[in-house]
Length: 317
Ligand SMILES: NC(=O)c1ccc[n+]([C@@H]2O[C@H](COP(=O)([O-])OP(=O)(O)OC[C@H]3O[C@@H](n4cnc5c(N)ncnc54)[C@H](OP(=O)(O)O)[C@@H]3O)[C@@H](O)[C@H]2O)c1
Image (tube, rainbow, N blue to C red; front, side, top):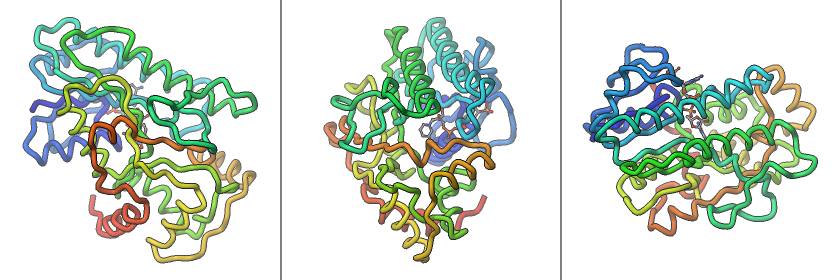
């Protein structure tokens, strides 16, 4: 297959490009910063049509992952960039698809599991899950993330693409041993003795192992009857207290300093990021994948954590 991955130079794009390339597919990454990669990369600016449009002609799959990283403080400037990079890249891909005679058969666009409300009470699947954004008293940063997710999906679904099936990937944190990825960040806390419960510890953590992320993307490409929004998350999210306890055990340490709210706010401020990642309760369930018969290889966090730690120890860049 010819697989075009827009914004495919980041954490998730590298996981997918590496896998598809190793399996003999023709991978083309669209990037604003061309550099040496084991697969082909073509320049785009993420907001205007250009020669990159030719890559979509007769391609089989388009995956759009482009978006300014959310790993930053949400200043007015970064908020604008986070929103615009996602909406504009989705819009320009629509313009491109409208202009070509043989567009990709399927387009998977990144979205996020953060679109659901803070959920301590019950799991959120695609059918009965409640989108967040209007809850009283929740931090403005959480509301902003939800607004971005909604605008992103709106820009994806509001324009029809008669020849191209569309799926929005509401992904949970995707864990791989790659350095700089989100698993690496959690493991660093554990290695430094800082991987104790993030208080209150009852907030749920939704996650997906990279193997299941790749397999679910392949599943969605193959299953022509599936379109719309799909949750990509392990079926067994767990409270932060247990999540970090399992990770400490997998690393081989029992000790971890619990993190109180004020410590977290200070730490995330110093690290120039937001505390939402660890404080918001994400209890996301992959209802549509399970209904369609998808089987997770790593449904349980203890198996996933052990495997990821093992490969993290042997990881080579
Ligand atoms: N990682 C996760 O666990 C996770 C979970 C849920 C959702 N997501 C979403 O999935 C997508 C991919 O995640 P990721 O972790 O791979 O993100 P990432 O590492 O930040 O990579 C995103 C890519 O987007 C491109 N980009 C950055 N700013 C841009 C801009 N202003 N305009 C156009 N392109 C821009 C960059 O490519 P170039 O610099 O090469 O152009 C970058 O490599 C993101 O949209 C993210 O929000 C990720």
